[in-house]
Length: 77
Image 1 (cartoon, helix red, strand yellow):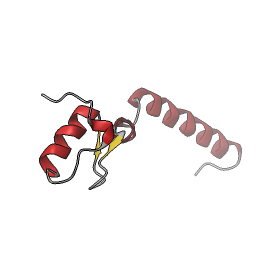
Image 2: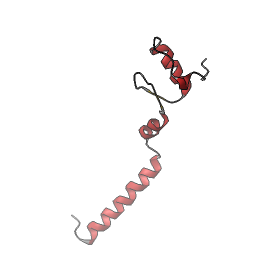
Image 3: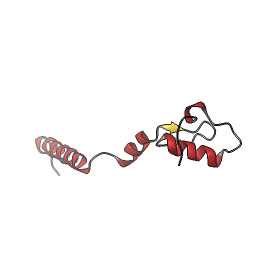
Image 4: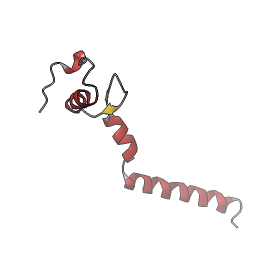
């Protein structure tokens, strides 16, 4: 086992290696996906990436509820 100065140097080297691997791996996919989900359904609180998908979801899943004001001017397919 390394002791004293050797231990400190090994920890520093390990920290540098972990940092390099983290940078090489790129961004976290889960965090990126969570940032992309910006529209939340007012009825079921499901998150969607864009207003077009949100409008399609609302029309299909909640047909009896009135369309929210933010979706009235969004063009669907």
